[in-house]
Length: 536
Image (tube, rainbow, N blue to C red; front, top):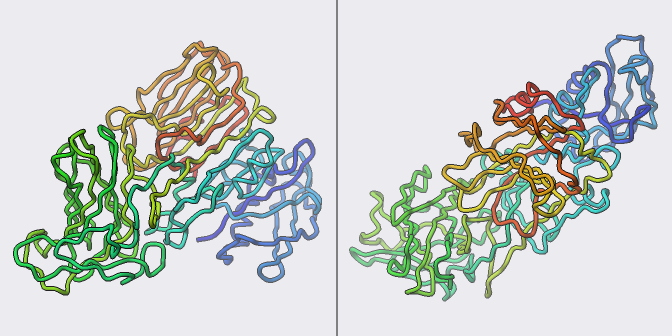
């Protein structure tokens, strides 16, 4: 796929880092052709060559010389392009691989250029006058009053399809381990894995029922040879399983999860056992070749994720009652027909790795443990806005992906806020039913917008919304349609923080992108921006 870069430059009246506005946007096409043979531009060192001035209206030219990773760029730009004239060599800041983003946010004749682009799927972090690059921590550091952090390590899937561990305070940009598509900034609440020896099923912490465990038998989802094999014995007409218990709180929802992979056996069942001690429980029977599964139990809820290389992560819900003190994660091997009661052959089995029991409304990213439980801290990402965002009017496009089903809490995609409920503007996914979009704004403790109508959650994992405001004129669009408006809108008095994640967050989400415009765009443009094909 050809790479489409952005030119970052400086023009009269603009600050460094402002996307270039040159030659009717055609420079993007030239650059696309220029870099079509370049497979990877990350880490590209670019030295600006001479800038030539062409006749007004002439097509721009761009030539790249040198060898990877160091290149020299020579530009030919029309005199007076975009009314600003051609830049000097010293004004050219960088070329970056960013798909076709330039088509949307730059180019001459585009009057509605944004003031900030946080596109986590492309690695573009840009706030006009402050920062242009790919680093979330650097962006937060460049704007006084901003905050980025997570006081622990955390796991995610990287672009190579393998699970990786991010260091403390390093944001996670998560990828689909099968398609390798970037899914965005992964935001999760604090969670504790209550299972010990999560990868060492041969440890005595794991009970074995008519089975044995062969340690480190194959490659795990993180690329290391730490996954164990559970092998059935020859007992007739019985189950062959491994299980582990963890102390959980009564009347509190917990999620149990584990990674499983076919070996000689291609089916298994993952259960939340201790039936008498649970008011809600789930049993999942899964085909380890296709990933097809059925969930049964009392108010069952389950999720099966394809983690690549034959691995499936099975997550199941349980809710224990006061008659017990623990929850049990159980994995039973099954024969070719899916029966868990059968006669074992003494050699067949499946691969199992990464057990987790956590209290919360959904399963979260894997937290490895050894001799003790481990807690993953919550993410915090807050961008101070007072120095660059005029609150009198504006437009925000947000695309976000729900990770969990609605479960008692609203999932906020972003909040412009003063830090209290007295003044804010936010886009959520509601907790009720199948989950709807939810736009809410309060000014001076008076509700201005509280709307969920015309915003059903789409069939795709991610949703897009565009909201706009100025005094007496607010509107919001959802998935390409105008969802609502308020012709008596009162702008909040103060919203100095753009909050994408906070230490008090209780739900998980992936945020793909947020784009902020310094003007109240038209309702037609709101619909175009929120359309799934409107920003690519």
